[in-house]
Length: 310
Ligand code: ZN
Image (cartoon, rainbow, N blue to C red):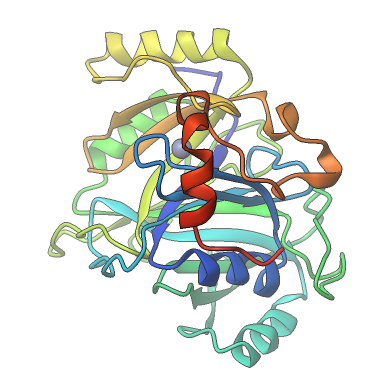
């Protein structure tokens, strides 16, 4: 069993409109845009990162806004809900704020003894907020959202699977422990992780595979401290029969990817070097940053990519 994985690193989803996506995450949810760059494989598409002040692993929601992309059709084999942590008692505030801003899918419920508020993102993305007592992470505070209410980072992701057996076995190998099963949902957590440590597996044997599109989670990334730990994880996964990509330099972290037996695309990402490697912390996310191989495209991209509000 591995001990290098320290919870979630980031979650990457797809959207249909960059400006709407940016406004929702910065203005409505009050996260900080910590990087404005482009998709390595499609440089005409943004890659936008939202998180806490510095984009600490475990807080970072990222998006590929493909202009006019059709909506995904939710199903199995994908992350169904991305869950953020807010202070206990902040859910009424969020219910008012989200409904005032036209968010849909608002529903309060209690799961695993925790109060939560489900809501949908601009493309129908599945989100929830969970009230957590004493989450130690310092929040980014902006747009009138103070520290008593602001998002701390991820609480968990929930994966929808036709059968959770193989995914649960894999997560156990990755260092997760099964905590309990309630109402058909099995909760796992990585011991010793400070936050963003929980994964819920929802078994839906009769539901078809999801069709990815706007509002779908493209992949979920798990955090390791550095490249050395990443290579240990890569070798262990390969030795147990997983097809893992080579290490890929993503400028702000190094990444490896593999498709899991339940259908969800996993990434293992390093906590180094971080989002401040090419911008001061005070100005993170403001300038358009381009990967080395796309730098020559700057004049075209600056003209072509939609202008985002700060
Ligand atoms: Zn990623």
